[in-house]
Amino acid sequence: MTSLYSINPDLAWRVIDNEVVILKIKTTTYYSLDPIGTFIWKRMEKTPKTREEILKSILEEFEVENTTASNDLDELIADLVREELILESAA
Image 1 (cartoon, one colour):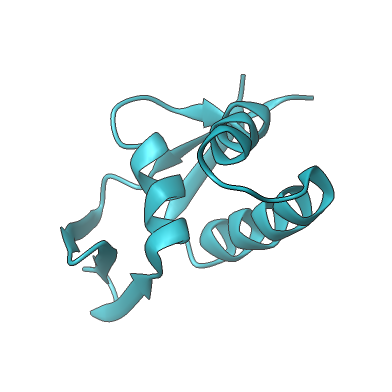
Image 2: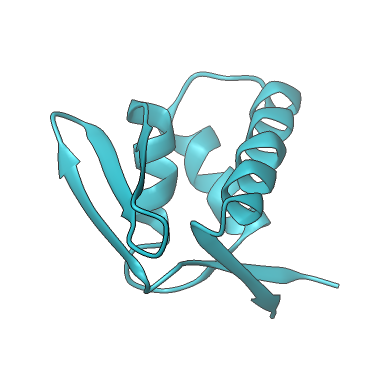
């Protein structure tokens, strides 16, 4: 099954100095993403994306090995889904 990932609409967020700052309004918990996390976040800003679409954009933008990018992306997606910062749905 292919999943689509999108930003949870119940969040307040903003990009400040190449970092995304996120406020989970329900819990008033604050999060921030580094510049690469922000790059990934911005890929989902307008439309949901698949893991493969996000990975492709990372590989096009950064000099990184596919395996490293893939593993790091899987870890970030798992963290963001667990914290309910992004939503996962069937494609």
